[in-house]
Length: 89
Image 1 (cartoon, rainbow, N blue to C red):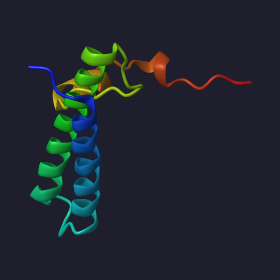
Image 2: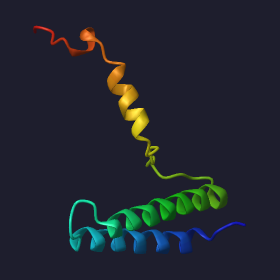
Image 3: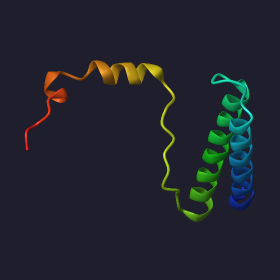
């Protein structure tokens, strides 16, 4: 099923506005409304990007990284002393 890029863009803009509204009205740092708005925004972006690529052969310059805490922990573990040294100029 191909989605109309214009409709997908409208949905993306609405998702951006809803995310912003959720951030403004959040009650604490772990407000589930912000998390929900984030998920809707990420989904709307992917649908728009896919529609743009399918219909027009174009892409946005944005990338949604994987939301995986294990990757962050692995990256920190990969650092060694050489990575932390500061070179004298």
